[in-house]
Image (cartoon, rainbow, N blue to C red; front, side, top):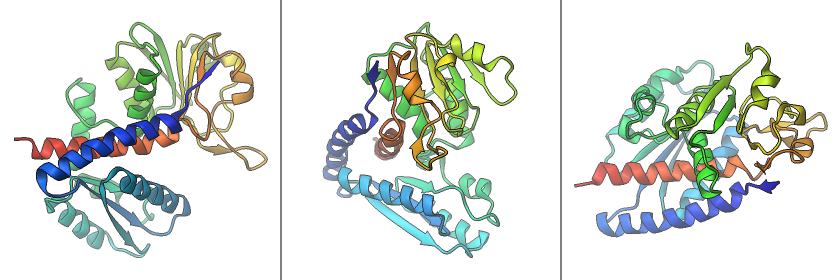
Length: 283
């Protein structure tokens, strides 16, 4: 079994992007700008935002962090997003989810112009992905595709099974694999004979949010297993959706948790931001 090192791969990608960011700054007299909006005091969200800001600094991207209190009204939040949308020095806008319950995330996200949607969540970007057109794809699935590419894992003609159908991971993951000529099956909570479906997979993507849900008896010998989960086990230790200890005996490639898919998500956010800036300023 070969371990897929997302942490090291992300480091290499950030170094590559630093070159692009420096070239952009020299050509345009300003740095690429990513605006990050955090509303409320969710601890996990604060950690995510700190990590994103740190990664921006390492890459030479200007991070514009906006921290608003949990009591922020819908109107106040919308006013800020509109101002960022109109700011020509802002190339990407990221609204950190989840938002406080009284805020309408869908309305706020809809205010982000498609060309500044670096999360790849806008209906237009999702539609373009489905149509196999040029678009910004969601960061986590895009990061997984980049891991497969850099580890020379073929997708064309392979049977891929995605366990999970979220708009953030499962659905865009399936579309990206389909666009890469894999034969794709999406499984979810209502799937019958889940184990049998997983056993058919040459490439198995676990994105269900249940600790150690994928066990060795669900994995075909020699399968590539990608673990998107970020969970806590019964002892409170960080783990993924895959039972790493048992599955490593059967998988040909396997991502660890932590250090697998997680670092790639932020790396691809920076990639999407660089690409957005370059598209917006292309002559």
